[in-house]
Image 1 (tube, rainbow, N blue to C red):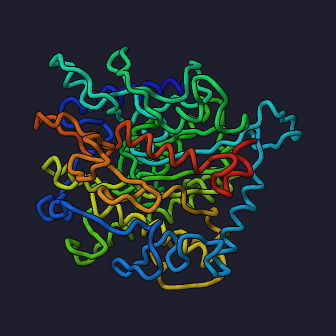
Image 2: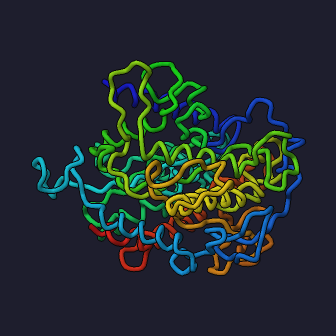
Image 3: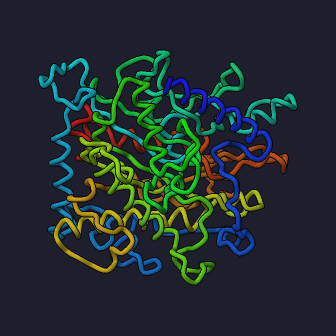
Length: 490
C-alpha cells in the first residue's frame, strides 16, 4: 500500500507537471518565481555577457572576489601534487576508502555474512540533486513544449527532454533503466545519451561491474535547500509532496529516495558512494555583492551552508522525533565517499527570455557556485588535519568524525565562447562561438515564436551528452578517478 500511495502521488505530480509545462514554461522542473523576488533589482537582469576563469584552468595567482580560482583554493587543482601534506592526506584517504567499498546485501552484510551471497550483493552509487542532475543522469520522458505544440498540431522539438522520474536499474517492469523523451507513445527520435543510457546500453556490456548499481535519485525542482534536512531546509517549512500525509518533513527527499531504492530491490544500507549536484533557485546575492541586501549571504556562501548541513546528515543521522524511542542511526550507514560538483554555464539564462524565469540560475551564480564547493572540500582538508581557520564559518564542522569524505566530481563549468583548456564549452542562443554552428546545449524552445522560448538553463540532448561524457570518463574502470577505479568494476 505504501508504494501504491507513492505511485499515486507521483502520478498526480506528473499530471500537474504536464499542465504546468503547457501553460507556463518548457518543463515542470522550472519552479515558480519565489514570492517577493525582485527581478528588476536582481543581478541576472544586468548580466548579459559573462566570462571568467574556469576553476580547473586557474592558478593560485588568479583571484575572484577574494576567492582563489582553482578547484582546491590554495592547494591548486591537484591535491596529490599540491605540496601541502594535508591535501595529500585527504587525497589518499579517498583511495583508502575506495578500497573498502565492497558489494553488500540489502541488510548491509558483506558476502559470506548472514547468508549474503555474491549474486545478491550490490554497491549502490547514488546520484541525487536537482533537475539538471536528473536529466543528465537519466534523460527525460517528457519533451519540453510538447503539450503546447501538440495542441497546435506542430512537430516536436527534438532532444528537449524535461527532468522526470527515472525508472532505474531493477525497476519492476523490467524495461531499460533510463528515460527517452516521448509525446504520448511516440518517441521523438532523438537518443538522449544520458549517463544511465551509456552505462547500461541496449546491447553489449555495462560500463560498470556486475555488482555496481548506478542509481538516479535526483528530481526536478529539488535545489540545495530541498536536500538540507535542518530547520533552514525547504521541506522543514513546506509540505512534502512525496509522503503519505500532509506535513512538513525536512527529510522529504531522502524518504522519497529510500522508497525508490526499495521499489527497485535495493536499500539504503547498500549505498556506499553518493554524487550530489544542485544549486540555488533564483539567486539574489553575488560574491561581488552588487545587488545584495545588507545582511544577506552571497549565494555561493549560502550554498556552502546547505552543503555542510547535507554532508553532516549523510554521515549521521536520521532525524529522531522528540521523545521517540527510535535509536539515532545513519541513513546511509555504509557510506564511504561523496562527490560534489557545480553546474554548467548559466549565461544563456541571463535576460534571454525576459521576465523573472530568466533568473532561475544564471551567471555569475552558476560560476560562483564552484567556490561554494571548493570551500566545502578545502574546509574538510584543513579540519581533517586539525587546521582551523575562520573561513570555515559557512561549511561548519567538516572533519571525518562528523562528515563523510568529500571531493569533486567532474567540474562542468566553462565559458560559452572560450573553450577551457580541455576543450569544454557550452552553446546557446547567444553564443558567438563558431564551433557551435547554430546548435544548442540548453533547452531553447522555438526561436521564431516569442511565446515558446525555453529557459536556456536546463541541458537539452546535446548538453546531456556533454555532461554524461564527463561522468563516463570519471567512472572509467581503467582511466577514471583514482577514487572510483578500485570498486567501479566489481
